[in-house]
Image (cartoon, rainbow, N blue to C red; front, top):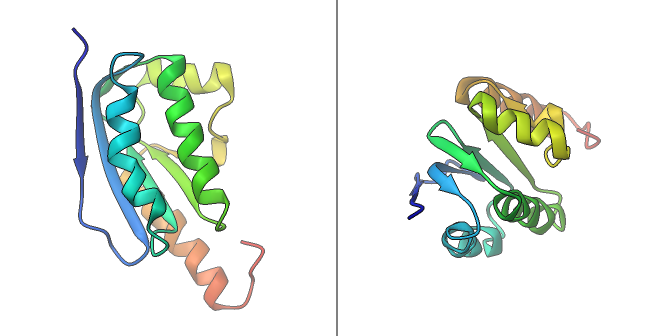
Length: 129
């Protein structure tokens, strides 16, 4: 039986971090969709950081869940950032090109630096960030 662990951290300003572990597949993707639904509907959330450090496996159903989250946030100029993917998960993303390479980071600190830089650009008037 597939198990999926989801931890939703407290939001920081307009950034919401969600840690996902275990297996994200046809048996578990609905759990992720249901956990993300209220976050994706919250207009205050502009960036969703998916920490995949504990994710051991992802199927096409899991990739679709991440794609749906990206699409939902894109409607309000938000984005989904993927951090800490295991090598096998990174390989899936590379194969399906589901997540742009500039939105995959080797650590949460790297993603935070990216988010800080993007927010700084907006504050400085460069809205094309």
